[in-house]
Length: 112
Length: 114
Image 1 (cartoon, rainbow over the protein chains, first blue to last red):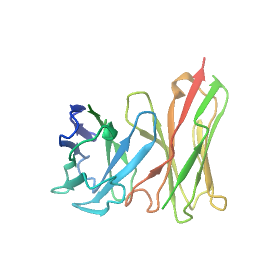
Image 2 (image 1 turned 90 degrees about the horizontal axis):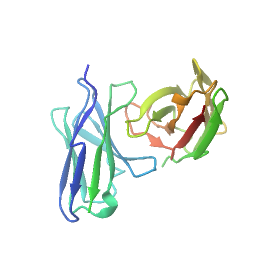
Image 3 (image 1 turned 180 degrees about the vertical axis):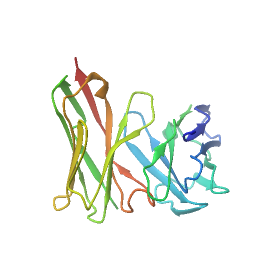
Image 4 (image 1 turned 120 degrees about the vertical axis):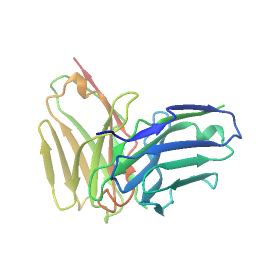
């Protein structure tokens, strides 16, 4: 079946603009996660959804970052007033109730 | 919160040799420890995982060991092949991996020389 998909695959934006990143999880997966991977670095946790609710938002780096999930499926990560330090690959993952996290291909964000 | 340290950051071995990557974690409540392999430009993929009620797990050339007392776990790759070259990430989770986030180490870049 289809894996986790993300769009766009690449996004170039100017400093100060808002961006929206989309994640389509594997059908039936109740949990959805957002991570950020800076060049040559590990994966930094941002936010986690169980269904449509986000019990853990502790990783969001600032109030410019927000995320939502609707219908227990698609999720969008929004970054307002982007800064150059927001440049990174944003990875989404999904899992079943007791299974591994499957990652999407990521969105490479470049803030000029 | 949880903190995961991973060593070494880079590792170069000859084809056929073994490779060992080590991780330590800080929160004794963590109970799920996966290892992900990320090839250049690709998404991370799970290669093996272990839960805190098990001390060792093996899958062909890959094995993971867990020492809960010392709060460290290790990945062992035997008979390495060039296709094992990638970045490997360890991670820890407080909630079994499916009901909470993973905290990742910073990764180990493994190079296997033919």
